[in-house]
Length: 399
Image (cartoon, rainbow, N blue to C red; front, side, top):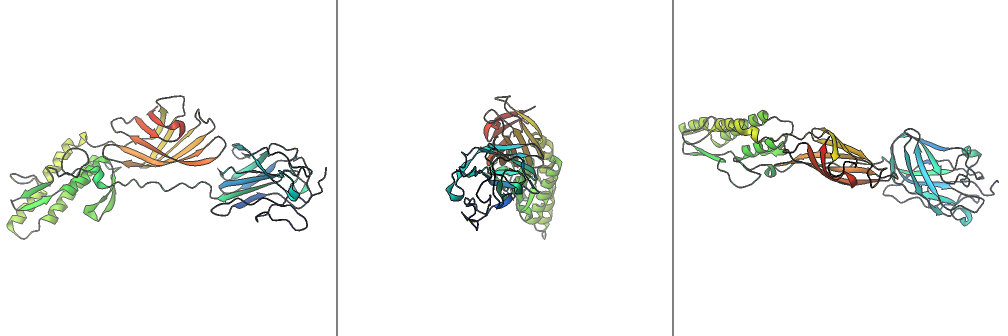
């Protein structure tokens, strides 16, 4: 039956009335930035019940869907709010459906509007709106029989937070010229005295060497605090820098001009004197024993199974230097969920940790941001410990 009301019209103002006795509409959603109306097939003509054609829209960019409105005039009776959903005709992925709330239409007709606020991210593509009551869904010739809908969204969709750089303070991965874990305590090998007169402190070169063996990303105080990322460096390359750094320290601490300085500089940059050791001797020592303390760099690319419950979803990881990405789907708590991880591998004194974020999409399509960390012990390269959302947490082993 033909309705006597003017048709379905959406405006961006708050509860504005269309001129000529038109249809009042609910307030637009509040947001830090005003939402954009990315689809609206409403018009000012009279409406009828019974949507008979699909309601389809296309977008050429990613959006975060803030609200979806469908219209149920239903001969001035409205309709009890049901479910609204969204289906990608590009990928066949279904979003929702979500339980709608009602809002009055023209003349106070109850539940003339059905409204959902899914806050989901959708990529560019072609989409169809679904409504659980096609019989009361308003349509007319202007919509070609499609149910009347308005879609409000924010541009850009999901935005990843800035990830850590991977840099650590040098002091957290160094202990000077001696064995042991990171420490600021003086070490027996920090200093040497040449020709009984020239004291040289090699601690900073040793600290940088320690950072290199850990594969850390640090500032280099010997070279203007420039960033040095040792992750891809081999032991040989780290040892060669150690020798160069020590020789630069020798040049800086022992200035030529006296016979003792000339001899001291030669000892400092070479093998040392009768009771002291020089840069070359130190270099030869680390080349010999370094293979026992040089940390292998984590290799995380692959599939990691949950040790505690192998029936939970596996974590697939890919790694490019320090950039780590991951994904998984489902889980007992929410079989329809999916997650995407992005993080940065941070090399520490005796282990490594990946810090990052998870874009978690639950079974209804709602998106949230969560944190996740992955700890890697070089002594157990095929095992990681994950602290993150849902079923992905816990110890995991490569499979």
